[in-house]
Image (cartoon, rainbow, N blue to C red):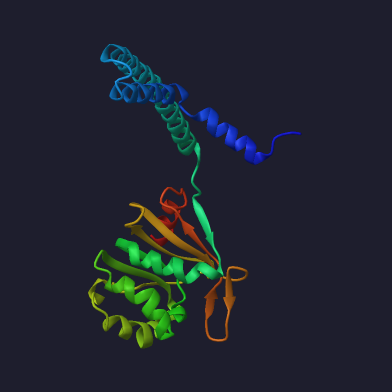
Length: 244
C-alpha cells in the first residue's frame, strides 16, 4: 500500500532533521548524567565533549557553505530579473476608459507643474460647478504650476468671458492663467500638456473629438476615452509643435 501524502510529509520532516547534531547532543547529555551519577569519570566525558564541539563546528561549516550558495543564487536571480525589466518597453500611450476618466484627470491635475498648455478643450465641460472644482480649480490653485495657457477656438470666447473667467478669478493663483490664444481650430484633437511631479517629465492627456472618443450630450461634448501620453513618448514634441 503506497504511503499517504501525510506520511510523505512526515518522512520528509524526519529526513530534514540534523540527526548528526541530535546524536552528538544526546551523547553529551548521557555522558554528563553518567558523570553526575559518578558512573563515569571526567576522563570519559572530556573526549565526548570535544567530539561534540568538533561535530557542531563541521555542521556550522556545512550550513555556512549552503548559505553562500543560496546568496549566489539570489544574486544571479536578481541580476536576471533586472535584465528582464530593462528589456521591457513601457507603453508610450495608455488608453483610459470611462470608469477611470475622473480619477486620471484629477491625478494628472494634482501632480502637474511648470508651464502648462490646454489646447482646443471644450470649455462647456467646465460649466457644471462640480466639474470645474474637480478638474480646473486644482490646476489654478496648484502652487507647483507656474502658468496656464489656453489655446482655444474663437467660438468659445463668450463662454470663457461669461462663465469660466469669473470662476477662475475667484481662485487662489488666478494670476498664472494667461489670456487665451484665440484661433480657428478644427475639432480634431484636444490635450493638456504639463510636467508631472510623479514621473519627473512632460506628460499629456490627449482626447479626440467625435465618436467613439467623445460623446455628444444635449449641452456639451463629454469625453468618453482619453489617452495618457507618457513622458518618454515620441508624440509629445508633435503636441508642443501643434500648440505653437
